[in-house]
Every structure is written in C-alpha cells, then in structure tokens.
Amino acid sequence: MKIVTVIGARPQFVKAAVVSRALARAGIDDVLVHTGQHYDPNMSDVFFAELGIAKPAYNLGVGSGLHGAQTARMLEGIERILVAENPDWAVVYGDTNSTLAGALAAAKLHIPVAHVEAGLRSWNRQMPEELNRILTDHSATLLFAPTAAAVSNLCAEGINGTRVRLVGDVMYDAVLLFSELTEATSDVLQRLGLSSGGYVLATIHRAENTDSPARLQAILSGLLKVAHRLPVVLPLHPRTRHVVEQNHELNESGAELFLIDPVGYLDMLMLEKHARVIATDSGGVQKEAFFHRVPCVTLRDETEWVEIVELGCNRLAPPHSADAVAAAIEAALDLCIDTTESPYGDGHSAEYIAAELAVSCECPV
Ligand code: UD1
Ligand code: UDP
Image (tube, rainbow, N blue to C red; front, side, top):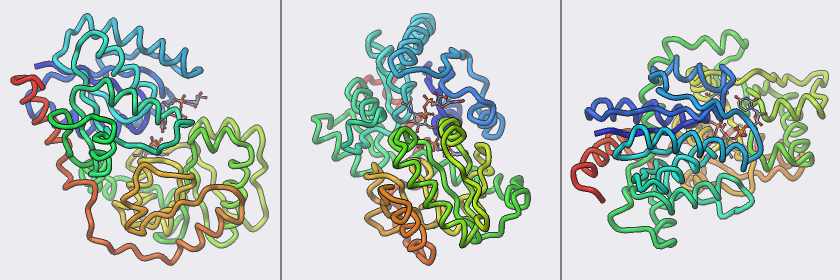
C-alpha cells in the first residue's frame, strides 16, 4: 500500500512527524512531497532534523507568492508526482495552500484524499484558511476530525456517515511524543535568560493581523505595555518580520520585548511550557498552551478551537486597541488551568489514522 503525503508549511511538519511514524509502523509506504511553501531553514529544515521526519522524496520548491500563483505551482507539481506514483491515498493536513493543492490535484485524478484535521470552521470566509478547509473537506474521501465540534460542522455541511472519523488531534500526540526530548535537549530558557513562569510568549502571523496596520499596531503596542511588567518573547514569523521591520519602532525604555527568529519545535515546546501566559493568533500554539496548561489569549475575533475557550483556558482578545490586548494578557496572568478535560483525544490519533488508512485500502470507503 502506498500513500503520497503532501506537506509544505511549519505546522504540517509537526503533524506529519507523528502520522508518518504511525504509517511506517503499519507497514505503509509513505511518499513525502514538500511543496516548498515554507523554505527558510528555521521554518522547514529544523523540523525535519529535530522530529526525525524522512527527507521528502520530492521538493517542489514553489516558494512564496500570491495565493493563486503559489497554489497553481503546487497543483502542477503535485499532479505530475501523483501520476508517476499512482498511490492508493493522498494525505493532506490542516488548511494551508499546500493542503488545498494536494487535495484538489488528487481528487481530480480520482485518487482518494484523506484530510487530517478536517471539519474545523472559523465561519470567517475572509480567512484564506477557511476556504482551504472547506474546499479540502468537500474533496476528501476520508475526513479525520480532531474534535466533536468538527464532526458536527461536517454533518451540518452534509458530510457524514462512513467518511468521517473522530480521531483526536495529532498535535496532542506530538506534544506527548516530543516532551521528553524537549526537556533533555532544549536550553532555550538559559539562552534567553528566562525563568520558568517569568515571561509571556507571543506569536503573530495570521494575515488578518499582519496585513492590517491598525491591528498589528494594537498587538505590538499592547505587548510593549505588558513588557514593562514582565519580559515578552516574540519569535517572529518571517511574514510578520517583514511588516514589523518596515513600519514599527519597538524599542521603549523599560520594556523587555524580545524579538527573536522563529525557533525549532523543541525550543518552542519549552518556551510554551514555562510561559506565564501565551498570546497568539496561531491555531497550533493555542492548543499547545492548553496541553501545557498555560493560560492563552487568542489575538483574533474567533477561533476554530472552541473547546479551550469553553473550558475557560483560552480567551479571545480581538486586537482592536493596545489597551484591549494588554488588559487581556494581564487578566490571564493569574489564571490557573487545572482542568482534567481532554477534548483533543487520547494521544493516539496518529495510530487511529494509520489503522483506518490500512483498512480503507483493503476495503475502499
Ligand atoms: C501559512 C498558511 C497559514 C499557516 C501558516 C503556518 C496559507 C494560506 N497560510 O501562512 O494557514 O498558519 O502558514 O506558519 O497557506 N516567508 C519567508 N520564509 C518562509 C516562508 C514564508 O520569508 O520560509 C514569508 C514570505 O514573505 C511569504 C510570507 O512569509 O510571502 C507568507 O508565507 P506563506 O506561506 O504564504 O503564508 P504564511 O503566512 O506562512
Ligand atoms: N512553532 C515553532 N516555532 C515557532 C513558532 C511556532 O516550532 O517559532 C510551532 C508551534 O509549536 C506549532 C506550530 O509551529 O507546533 C504552529 O505553527 P504556526 O503557528 O506557524 O501555524 P498554525 O498552527 O497557526 O497554522
């Protein structure tokens, strides 16, 4: 049995790291295709090296660009590979342009598509990710939903029955799998001079924030306010760095705001685990905050990961002003997260996915 896995962006490397291991254990031949959507060493290579992901059989090297051009370059390359490899399944992850290109290329060739992290919805069609998710779900044959809410979303769109499997979230598997290695190898706290529980960790990369001068200004000024009280560490996604460097002055006497390059996954887990609060617009980082039981403030108007908000572990803070951002973070500083709820599965999602794919190959869905 052969699978072609299409990945290309940072969070997909983390997800594929656990699923590809499970596929290998199930005896499934997994041909990795890297679209090249992310290409800086600290956005791509570091994940392959740290997480033991095999070198991709193909790297399309599409690079950055407008959505249409970037997706089109991926489609063309993936189609060529699928024709040559003729796999039993194409596997795609999440909601990036690489996800959509993989799903569309395969579905048009009548190769069944398995979508890992299916059924998430923000209900905000302005987000490129929302379009990618919806189109991918509707072209998929097997939909691996991480949460009960995701299953409900799919049902509401008429996708149900034998095509949908509730398997939990592979990112939870990844945190469990790599926690020990993180503790053994990461020295990021020492390198940055941080103490456990003594700083705020922030990430920003969502287009709705980086492409809106007002929202980005509110976030950065809000973080600066907090940085007068305790250090704020901001590993900057390259998309954000481009905008920040052009438009923003972030040196303020008395404020400890540390802008650093993106870090590898193991350093990131370490930074998350020991943060007092995490402020982010990332989907993955919101959940990782929860897995580490660290209070989270989500700098968006809505989230797909509604469970953590419902449990009171994550608060939405639409970045409409610096005061709103700073107040949300400061209110979270003394939150104690002690829930035993586990809305993202039992840490074996990747194994369930591999087992389903193995069975579905014998007995097509
Ligand atoms: C993409 C996904 C987003 C996901 C994020 C994970 C889409 C539409 N968006 O957003 O859902 O949350 O990845 O990080 O697929 N750049 C570099 N070096 C790199 C990669 C990007 O400099 O290695 C810069 C380029 O200027 C590029 C910009 O970042 O234009 C945006 O990159 P792109 O992959 O288009 O989107 P992301 O914002 O990374
Ligand atoms: N991440 C990382 N280094 C960083 C920032 C994020 O390793 O500097 C990891 C993070 O731990 C998570 C994933 O990247 O596993 C999330 O990716 P991102 O925030 O880029 O995308 P999203 O999850 O929002 O799609």
